[in-house]
Length: 510
Image (cartoon, one colour):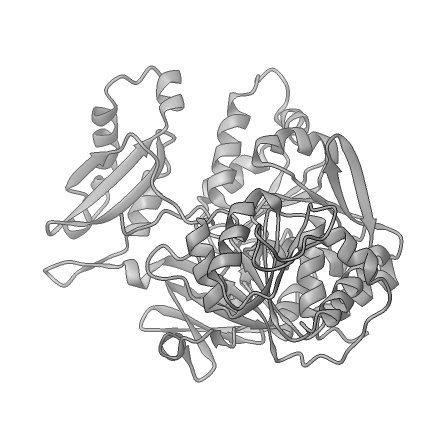
């Protein structure tokens, strides 16, 4: 069966995996499941519901934590010719309203945890004709409480049961994903069915059907949706939904996942906790106890991962596969595999992707490269050149098509003497010390400055009393191997965490 659209993936899943669990999730203390066949039926019911409201082809926003209804709204919209707009559930209501207006959204699907945002949108977003609540048990007409009607998601599905099918253009926009960049205004990345589908299906990772995964990353991110959800459904994974970041450990033991996707910040914190567990047991047994007994693989993306962590997790019997991507590429550009893993690289280019280096910047081209930024022609022209996506990352590609990243072009520090310094290179050296929880390197008054947020827990355990003295000693060690222009001349110690984007990257303009 040819797979060119996300609808093809849903149909493929129903045909190949049928009554196998596609999703498992908790409702209070009860574990519920939805089969691949049920997922197809619910997505089609959502599409029929949009048709009844005259919303086919319109832009539909969805906001909330990872949930079965969230996924159903995504596919139900995109697979009926509409444009899905996933929003960051952590943003303030005012920011969400601005994005809803900017994306020309006609309907909002929301989790009641963000009722505040829905109420604000009803008043401040004139393009909205209705809203759909994931938890409401009955429809509420427009009135004093809301200027637009609020529909019950469950009732919406049950009222519109039945099959739905329409021809889709694989190369037409079906999603607008807003970036959560570390600097500047967020941009609406326009992606097509082909962009997302090719990214999910082009690489065989040899993961057998029936493998159990657990979603831990925010679902509005392309990395989570494409790899956890879209690829997972294509290859027949049973996807378990983690209901809260506070319950990760408990849910690991409940769902017993074999594979998870994580960002480096979380991987580092997990390793710190692993090290603190009683060391009387062999390391592989410690990991079994901590992760439910079956975890074999962690896929890492979103930022640089210290290669030492990959070696350290291997001692616990867990393979960490580092990859690389960006929302503008749907998002995966390269990844390491269990049988093809160059530690230190961010993986081998995906089969649907080419790369070249222009003035030290990595450019990529392929079927997963975005259509452009929504209503931002100047930004689009600055990022896309003759089909090539200018990633903004500095790096190189080796003879085997493995990618190595050395820094961000726009973060590059250009000193008065003309020398260029990559702040990420120095930050990664600082991060090798467990006392450093977060670090930011920048130019300050013509010299290079490091600002560090230390790990208080580690300091307490190691009885470190003079924090600044210890961190200065670390800076001195880092400086030892550097040429004069790369040396860190100033140190600031923070007592609070840095502000971060929703993908856990430190905002550099602070």
